[in-house]
Length: 189
Image (cartoon, rainbow, N blue to C red; front, side):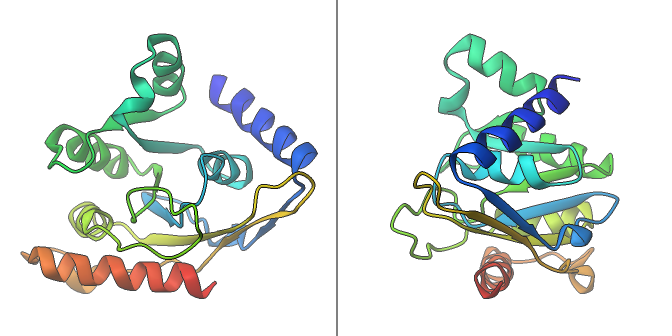
Protein backbone atom coordinates (compact mmCIF):
# COMPACT_ATOMS: atom_id res chain seq x y z
CA UNK A 1 0.00 0.00 0.00
CA UNK A 2 2.74 2.46 0.96
CA UNK A 3 4.70 1.48 -2.16
CA UNK A 4 1.69 2.20 -4.39
CA UNK A 5 1.24 5.60 -2.77
CA UNK A 6 4.95 6.46 -3.19
CA UNK A 7 4.90 5.28 -6.82
CA UNK A 8 1.90 7.49 -7.67
CA UNK A 9 3.50 10.42 -5.82
CA UNK A 10 6.76 9.93 -7.77
CA UNK A 11 4.94 9.90 -11.07
CA UNK A 12 2.92 13.03 -10.23
CA UNK A 13 5.94 14.96 -8.95
CA UNK A 14 8.09 14.00 -11.93
CA UNK A 15 5.28 14.83 -14.36
CA UNK A 16 4.70 18.25 -12.80
CA UNK A 17 8.36 19.23 -12.45
CA UNK A 18 9.83 17.75 -15.60
CA UNK A 19 7.37 15.84 -17.73
CA UNK A 20 8.07 12.14 -18.11
CA UNK A 21 8.11 9.77 -21.07
CA UNK A 22 8.43 6.00 -20.83
CA UNK A 23 9.63 3.71 -23.62
CA UNK A 24 9.73 -0.10 -23.62
CA UNK A 25 7.71 -0.93 -20.49
CA UNK A 26 6.82 -4.24 -22.15
CA UNK A 27 10.45 -5.30 -21.60
CA UNK A 28 9.89 -5.39 -17.83
CA UNK A 29 9.04 -9.08 -17.76
CA UNK A 30 7.62 -11.23 -14.95
CA UNK A 31 9.82 -13.18 -12.56
CA UNK A 32 13.03 -12.22 -10.87
CA UNK A 33 14.82 -9.45 -12.78
CA UNK A 34 17.45 -6.81 -12.22
CA UNK A 35 16.80 -3.39 -13.70
CA UNK A 36 20.28 -1.97 -14.38
CA UNK A 37 20.41 1.73 -15.12
CA UNK A 38 22.69 4.68 -15.57
CA UNK A 39 22.81 6.98 -12.56
CA UNK A 40 23.00 10.76 -13.00
CA UNK A 41 20.88 12.09 -10.14
CA UNK A 42 19.11 11.28 -6.91
CA UNK A 43 15.91 11.50 -8.99
CA UNK A 44 16.82 8.36 -10.99
CA UNK A 45 15.38 5.77 -8.62
CA UNK A 46 12.17 7.81 -8.43
CA UNK A 47 12.01 8.03 -12.23
CA UNK A 48 12.32 4.25 -12.55
CA UNK A 49 9.90 3.56 -9.69
CA UNK A 50 7.36 6.00 -11.13
CA UNK A 51 7.43 4.44 -14.60
CA UNK A 52 8.02 0.73 -13.96
CA UNK A 53 4.94 -1.51 -14.14
CA UNK A 54 6.24 -3.71 -11.30
CA UNK A 55 6.95 -3.14 -7.63
CA UNK A 56 10.67 -2.74 -7.12
CA UNK A 57 13.26 -3.41 -4.46
CA UNK A 58 16.13 -0.96 -4.19
CA UNK A 59 19.73 -1.38 -3.14
CA UNK A 60 20.78 1.97 -1.63
CA UNK A 61 23.92 3.28 -0.02
CA UNK A 62 23.84 2.81 3.75
CA UNK A 63 24.12 6.56 4.32
CA UNK A 64 20.51 6.94 3.11
CA UNK A 65 19.33 4.91 6.12
CA UNK A 66 21.16 6.89 8.83
CA UNK A 67 18.23 9.25 9.54
CA UNK A 68 15.98 6.70 11.26
CA UNK A 69 12.54 7.96 10.13
CA UNK A 70 13.67 8.18 6.48
CA UNK A 71 15.45 4.82 6.73
CA UNK A 72 12.29 3.20 8.10
CA UNK A 73 10.24 4.53 5.18
CA UNK A 74 12.85 3.32 2.70
CA UNK A 75 12.74 -0.17 4.21
CA UNK A 76 8.91 -0.19 4.10
CA UNK A 77 8.95 0.49 0.35
CA UNK A 78 11.51 -2.24 -0.37
CA UNK A 79 14.90 -0.55 -0.06
CA UNK A 80 17.81 -2.15 1.74
CA UNK A 81 21.24 -0.75 2.61
CA UNK A 82 24.55 -1.67 1.01
CA UNK A 83 27.97 -0.75 2.32
CA UNK A 84 29.60 0.47 -0.88
CA UNK A 85 33.26 -0.13 -1.55
CA UNK A 86 33.32 -3.24 0.60
CA UNK A 87 32.12 -6.78 0.03
CA UNK A 88 28.77 -6.44 1.80
CA UNK A 89 27.71 -10.07 2.18
CA UNK A 90 24.47 -9.10 3.98
CA UNK A 91 23.37 -6.92 1.05
CA UNK A 92 24.28 -9.66 -1.43
CA UNK A 93 22.23 -12.23 0.52
CA UNK A 94 19.27 -9.82 0.70
CA UNK A 95 19.47 -9.16 -3.05
CA UNK A 96 19.65 -12.88 -3.86
CA UNK A 97 16.64 -13.58 -1.63
CA UNK A 98 14.63 -10.85 -3.38
CA UNK A 99 15.52 -12.16 -6.83
CA UNK A 100 14.81 -15.80 -5.90
CA UNK A 101 11.36 -14.67 -4.72
CA UNK A 102 10.84 -13.58 -8.36
CA UNK A 103 10.79 -9.89 -7.53
CA UNK A 104 12.29 -6.99 -9.49
CA UNK A 105 15.22 -4.98 -8.19
CA UNK A 106 16.95 -1.77 -9.30
CA UNK A 107 20.73 -1.52 -9.44
CA UNK A 108 23.03 1.18 -10.71
CA UNK A 109 26.09 -0.83 -11.87
CA UNK A 110 28.41 2.19 -11.80
CA UNK A 111 27.85 2.28 -8.05
CA UNK A 112 27.56 6.05 -7.82
CA UNK A 113 26.03 9.03 -9.57
CA UNK A 114 27.80 10.28 -12.69
CA UNK A 115 26.63 13.89 -12.42
CA UNK A 116 28.54 14.99 -15.51
CA UNK A 117 26.62 12.34 -17.49
CA UNK A 118 29.80 10.53 -18.51
CA UNK A 119 30.04 6.81 -18.19
CA UNK A 120 31.70 5.33 -15.14
CA UNK A 121 33.19 1.90 -14.76
CA UNK A 122 30.61 -0.77 -13.96
CA UNK A 123 31.17 -2.81 -10.82
CA UNK A 124 30.99 -6.62 -11.11
CA UNK A 125 28.00 -6.90 -8.74
CA UNK A 126 25.18 -6.79 -11.30
CA UNK A 127 26.63 -9.72 -13.28
CA UNK A 128 27.42 -11.62 -10.09
CA UNK A 129 23.85 -11.29 -8.80
CA UNK A 130 22.27 -12.06 -12.18
CA UNK A 131 24.30 -15.25 -12.67
CA UNK A 132 23.93 -16.47 -9.08
CA UNK A 133 20.18 -15.80 -8.94
CA UNK A 134 19.76 -16.97 -12.57
CA UNK A 135 17.74 -13.91 -13.58
CA UNK A 136 17.81 -11.64 -16.63
CA UNK A 137 18.94 -8.03 -16.55
CA UNK A 138 16.76 -5.31 -18.08
CA UNK A 139 18.89 -2.32 -19.14
CA UNK A 140 17.34 1.06 -18.26
CA UNK A 141 18.49 4.37 -19.69
CA UNK A 142 17.50 7.60 -18.03
CA UNK A 143 17.86 10.58 -20.33
CA UNK A 144 17.35 13.70 -18.23
CA UNK A 145 18.86 16.97 -17.17
CA UNK A 146 16.33 17.23 -14.32
CA UNK A 147 15.89 20.90 -15.11
CA UNK A 148 12.44 22.34 -14.56
CA UNK A 149 10.04 21.45 -17.42
CA UNK A 150 12.74 19.50 -19.33
CA UNK A 151 11.40 16.05 -20.17
CA UNK A 152 12.73 12.94 -18.45
CA UNK A 153 12.78 9.86 -20.68
CA UNK A 154 13.08 6.39 -19.13
CA UNK A 155 13.81 3.66 -21.69
CA UNK A 156 13.60 -0.04 -20.81
CA UNK A 157 15.63 -2.27 -23.14
CA UNK A 158 15.17 -5.92 -23.99
CA UNK A 159 16.16 -8.36 -21.24
CA UNK A 160 19.74 -9.61 -21.28
CA UNK A 161 20.08 -13.30 -20.46
CA UNK A 162 23.35 -14.52 -18.99
CA UNK A 163 22.22 -18.15 -18.82
CA UNK A 164 25.38 -19.45 -20.48
CA UNK A 165 27.16 -18.43 -17.25
CA UNK A 166 24.70 -19.97 -14.76
CA UNK A 167 26.45 -22.46 -12.50
CA UNK A 168 29.93 -21.38 -13.64
CA UNK A 169 32.51 -20.09 -11.21
CA UNK A 170 33.27 -16.71 -12.76
CA UNK A 171 36.34 -14.65 -12.01
CA UNK A 172 35.92 -11.08 -10.82
CA UNK A 173 37.38 -9.99 -14.16
CA UNK A 174 34.72 -11.94 -16.09
CA UNK A 175 31.92 -10.52 -13.93
CA UNK A 176 33.39 -7.04 -14.51
CA UNK A 177 33.41 -7.69 -18.27
CA UNK A 178 29.77 -8.86 -18.21
CA UNK A 179 28.73 -5.83 -16.15
CA UNK A 180 30.48 -3.55 -18.66
CA UNK A 181 28.59 -5.24 -21.52
CA UNK A 182 25.33 -4.59 -19.64
CA UNK A 183 26.27 -0.91 -19.36
CA UNK A 184 27.07 -0.92 -23.10
CA UNK A 185 23.43 -1.93 -23.65
CA UNK A 186 22.19 0.77 -21.28
CA UNK A 187 24.08 3.48 -23.10
CA UNK A 188 23.05 2.18 -26.51
CA UNK A 189 19.33 2.69 -25.74
